[in-house]
Length: 310
Image 1 (tube, rainbow, N blue to C red):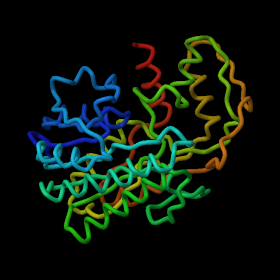
Image 2 (image 1 turned 60 degrees about the vertical axis):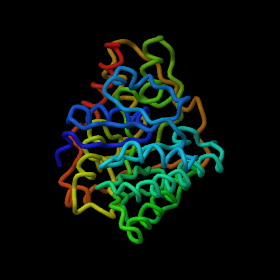
Image 3 (image 1 turned 30 degrees about the horizontal axis):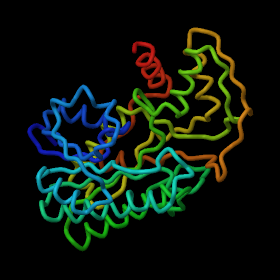
């Protein structure tokens, strides 16, 4: 699909994935509108302000959402806005109001303008801990309130697709990394410790994750949104390969030019830790023709280079 001159509206555009997505959409020639809270930090997209149309509001406020969608008149909606993604102890009521009720507000507003596609972004946290690759048909056993609210949002999106004719599609990215990731996450924390010549304190790092580079996720989102056969379906966005956190840390240490001390086992695991989460990507390959192209070593190198260059 060509995005040239298409009016798109992106929620969560100032987030990690959202900021990369809108950069790509701008490159593709889209007319990009972003729905953000007035109080949100805009560091990731500050340089893009002249190329964006801003709509301010809160997903929890149905009138603000409705007004923004009415003004934007989007031909495509990318719903990435969420609360609680990086906080396991986030208040359940708060994340439900944003992630589930806020999604309903956006779906209702879209019924009036009839976009050609509504893309919903879920999370790998919705799945249970599994030692085998996880398919989209796996039972949803959310690991926390954030994931439970995300599952609810997708169920509502499917309902609006079936009963109200809204063209919806969904993606569940696995563990996304790359330039611009939140400071407290694994790789940015490693880079910070290395730059400061500090010992990096870690768990025993036995968890296995499907690390996927941000550019691959953005490509997957756009291919999903542009595929007519994808409507109504959910797609895993992952590499299909598992890497232990310990191995990821080891890969980073090999790439880093200076010495670095790692204190494995220095901090405890989180309660209800997920030990193994790797995507089954067969459906995305067969229907979308999409698969991740950037390996862990290359993606990590790009991420490190982007931080060092700043």
